[in-house]
Image (cartoon, rainbow over all chains, first blue to last red; front, side, top):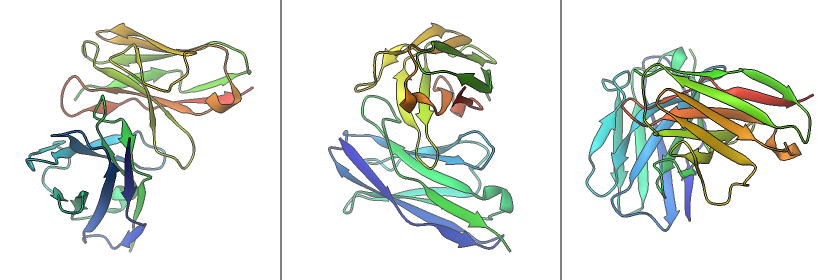
Length: 117
Length: 107
């Protein structure tokens, strides 16, 4: 079993950036990836991409490639998602998820990011 | 990007009913299709992957079928805890995409 605990809610102004953390505990599958997904109110879930924990390799959804960064700190089993050039449309709950049998077996509790002037 | 369209978007049913949700893909996704349940304020919970493989711990009243472009999620004998929103997701090609969701409410 893996538990993912995310950082708390954030409020940002348009044009700024936000960094969300996702700390893992429990049995972590070797060479697994941490996925990032968001859900804006009234919209479908949207996949942002992933980072492979061991190698640091990343894969981004084209829509976010220019302004999202994934990093990880292996010493603390924590992954990070930083989204820049924020717009009001980026207001959403951001989730991390990771692998068991599939890439999305375990999910964090979600982090609400509000972008407002 | 592969578009996933679920039908219906909203479903009203009674406890004990059997319901079916359809997910159609804009192009073939083989069997790389997953289903999730989400309750308000909670993260999605994986129910089925590989179109028909039940995730460990998920009740057997949930089942999935399909391949290519058309998939179904069936819930037999609806229980009170099954009233939630259900999403499909394709993992055949990047970017991975989700359906718009089907909200199942109590009649």
